[in-house]
Image (cartoon, rainbow, N blue to C red):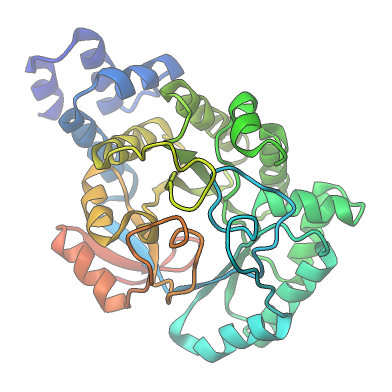
Length: 368
């Protein structure tokens, strides 16, 4: 019925052909992805993304009970879009391992996952971070430990004289369960040179994640959009992820992260509109046909926008957070003290007409 509606609609014939491919479950090309960004109506993108979402996960919207730990904001890198590092902030911090272990112990059964991501500290190598993982695992053996971006792992492994594979094995042996997927930014090294020139290359990020997948460590993937990149850059970014997923099947979720322009060196760039956010979710859900979950990180875009994104292909709202992250609040995000209870998340999802499903970190349903 939807295919017949599209056939009869007054949309551009090229867009119509692409839409019919999507509804038929046929993979679209990079060029067709760019056409969707440029030419497809927002309402059509929503319809197509929603159909892909239904085909992939049904009516469930996932969330979990988690806490973020940010070990430090002292960083060897000075990325122009960053509002978090000590280069931009008036204060710097370094949490001790004891302090971080105490956080997860005190929260007890309130959480099922700890998400550990921070700046790339010049004085800490992989053995320090493995000790942190080991201590957390010993204190909470059933807690899922999702920790460290590819950017952090590249630096800490090299500092210890290890390959990516060797470094990841050290972390896995200590109790690491998965990687969060941050640090991808945009997979175009010319753009990276302008916004985060000292940071890892596209190739290094992909190599770390491929190595993780081969070791049986699942990961997420991110993109930083809405700055100086083009639609072509976004599609190329997703194409590289789609190719890696074809090889390994190791990605759980894709998380578009919006550039926020407060308190950083790129504050002169106007943030993209909320409509563009929704269009980006929709194209992401359509293009990444082999990554099962699309996450709207609500501390970044706000609760109301996150609820609206559920109509544009999103099926995951992250978690309760427990007011434990500064990365986006320092950049001017709407939720300056991000925290939601399970009941609040479930109400938000139900109000949007979808079925709330509390998940573990690997998307097994705990409570629906």
